[in-house]
Length: 471
Image (tube, rainbow, N blue to C red; front, top):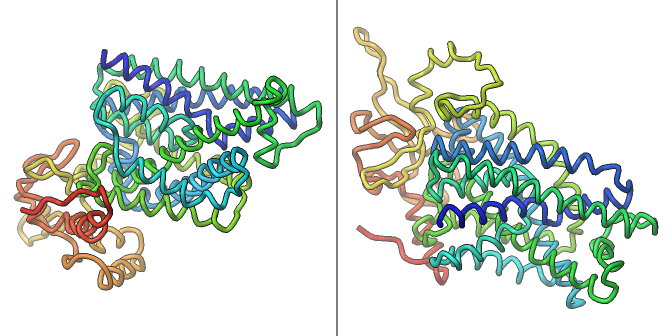
């Protein structure tokens, strides 16, 4: 029964990929301007998404890694930092567009301008995330169904999907179910997007209407429903954009938390994953700022969709390499891409097996990721690792020394007392596998200094934030 529920939930997730302000606006513009000529683009996009969603679920089920986890481990922090910068920037613009879509829907329904809705809408999105996922399975089903109704056709969908698979503890037995979700869900979602295009071709193209405003898109339904179609469209987009805003906010927080090895999860109390909660809190309210100044959400939508297309190679190319990596997928890897870098990997096997791996303490707590290594080189002995370094300026030094200097300056002005890199003796390493398990308690090392500081100074002071455990 549990798997049946997850199949249904996953199909709703996939269908949601086609119902949000970006996909509806672009499909409606295509139909209004070019009739049926661009149906092939929707079909091609659907086929691509079927493969991408299936692969992201398979990666999570087999390797127990999200896409972000595996990208950071496989390609290292400098490459991950470039991907993070591009993805977070585009995702932020999409979030602005989705919050604006909610505001425009409310403007149609109430007559009050969308800038007035920026703060109330952002607060409501944040509040639902802050309160977390309902504990009851049926309530959780309804909550997630609404939350992902309107998920963006973009890389964020596969990040979100793989994160959900990890939270639901998928294993290899879920691979057939994953294929069903990807195939049926995305196909049905593609038909919905085609329906928007066809409706625009029938209702708007004969009248010569090119969509450049939100209320023009609402005319799609007035031919069939002259009296209620306008308001029904506005209400539908309100629900869809609200769900998309929830998903994109989570996707951005996932990207930071999984990449840096923080605690994360929709079900956790905010004080238990304070850095994760802090990221989505800041992102949501920053996204409301452009709307307060009257920035047109439709223009932001079109720019963000173009940037999404431009940054696709940054996401898809490393993802395809991951899907061919036997370390992560074994016999379930993609077989059509040749792996010609094995000789180089053999030479740096030790570094690859340790650097950027997630660290787990005695209590199965996430401590972060390996930022650097201290090597001992003796005159009469082989070089060996003496310490693992976590956080501090070590991580940013790998990208550029200037970033390390900025990190040190900021740490002097703000934050916990423990500001430098945490050093863990290599002798405290219990095992090296998918993660590195240590014979230490995270709280005793200083690795959770920022987690505890943010929880006590920010998260706990917000109602409903919970309380950090003191030991």
